Length: 213
Image (tube, rainbow, N blue to C red; front, top):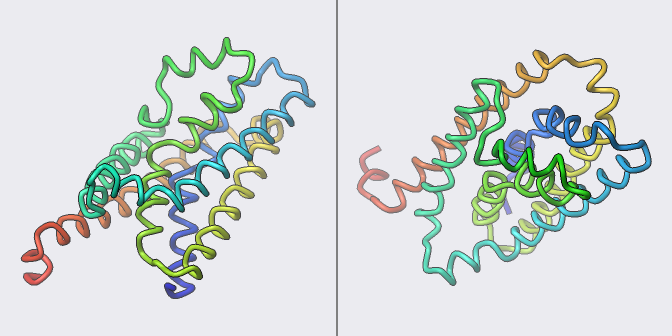
């Protein structure tokens, strides 16, 4: 089990990668014609879907890597590159296309139910947050670590629920500029995480880098 300070950092990191506030404009667009009752159903479906995906990823993700013969160090590098791509888009105040493409957004506008696709997948529980969960799960192998990770995921999803449930209020009281400022701050955090993942992956593949530092 890690130090409690490390778990606080993991919570902040996962929240930054998920970035619920940055998804608000997309949610507003996709649910503009929905009634209040329909919006509540959409939010509840999104919460259950995202929570399920992250919990399953926590316990199964590393086994999938083993099944495909992918080392955790290689995954750290690829995951770091993916997070860096997300961070660069967020630093420009945009949602990364690794999470949501324009075509997926347009398809979502005409779907009868958009709670699972594209809101849950790939907008919120996309490749970036899935990669982060797998990488942080690898930092410990005892049950206490996994229980703390479950708690962190639940807390992150609760924050997501609070944001999505407040979408009508947020869309009226927070401007797009305000959301973009928050998105850029989260992008800066994600960029630092990406560098850390890539550096650790390189040191794992090339031990001489670790001994030389």
